[in-house]
Length: 281
Picture 1 (cartoon, rainbow, N blue to C red):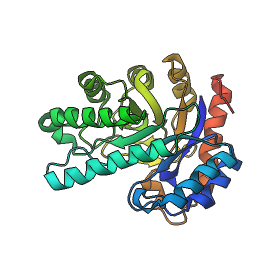
Picture 2: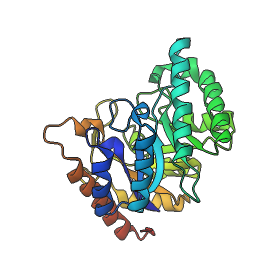
Picture 3: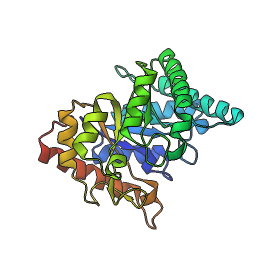
């Protein structure tokens, strides 16, 4: 496994400023957030900026582990849905454009919707995720929906049902363990279910039970990352562990993305050392 940094954690920091620091801390991978309000928002990336991102990744020997394109597929208004699907296809195109030698690019996205929408919209989600899988396949890019609390796909059983129904080689999962923790699911149960189907991960720290939970930066809360890494290793996962800082944390006065980037990295590094799980650097 390797440790990646999710630029979702740098809502106000330019990529060009953040990447050198992230590399110096020790991260070997990065997830690029291209969602609205982030400095690398998809449609703000002209040809020159895309070229510069690729150059910086090469200069600092950082793997582009994933692109976060979080855009709902649950929109029922036809015009809004068309715009959302275009954004997701354009994100897949960006992943293809930034492709690094020897790697199949990954696009991560939430399914969207509300937790109460699943029964009504799940078949619609299957159709739309399947459509995105076909487009991703045409670009040799993996599309990875993320199970997320509060959204229509909020539990592992829903994510696994979606995968079974879509049954597409270019549709996998992004696995954020925090959303299992805040509903009380044991670490081993969650990892055994999700890890075999996951191409990327997020880890945060957390306390409390949904919806009365709080997300924290790894290293600042009670979560047992040694247990998590052992469970992921036992489940056969060998990819990136993506350190993510929630917007809950970023909204707090005085938030410094570089301080939290270092805190999260060293918390995970310590957990790798304690667990004995191999870490590639």
